[in-house]
Length: 190
Image (cartoon, rainbow, N blue to C red; front, side, top):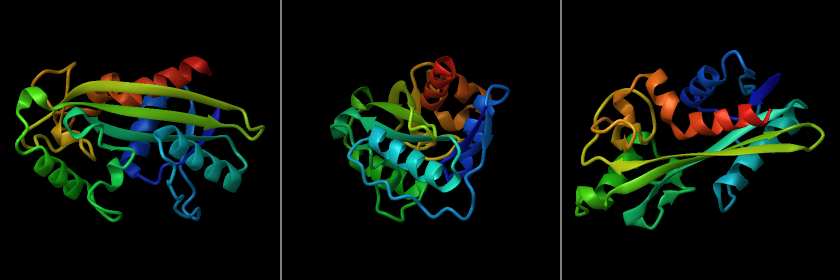
């Protein structure tokens, strides 16, 4: 089966391609497709908007995701705004800086967080398959590790005590990550 990826993030595309390898032929998002506005109020809505935009532009089945980092001490923020937490043009480092500043007075035992991913596949006949993946953990006091992207260097998953996602190899992360779990759920439904 061939699916067109909605992501314009090369790190996310690589991660998804590795997880789906041998099961789904993941095609890259065509360069000529403009940015899709993600203005839904939740992760599912944003994933659906992206899938609709790609399917409409290509005429092919599209796969899209939206992911949020939900921090307990921040009442679930940044959540749906994770990619733009420090502003509309913010990069990963700026988002991490804002997050750590907001958590500066929060002790380690109160830094619970989770990554949540919603994956949507939209077919030309308008049928939809969705799956969710969640990984729980904590927010580190300082960034650790150079691997991964986004908030990986500050997220300590429960499955690997003492290490951030930024310290795990791709295969280690993909086995336990929110995106990995959601993609395995999609594979199971296909």
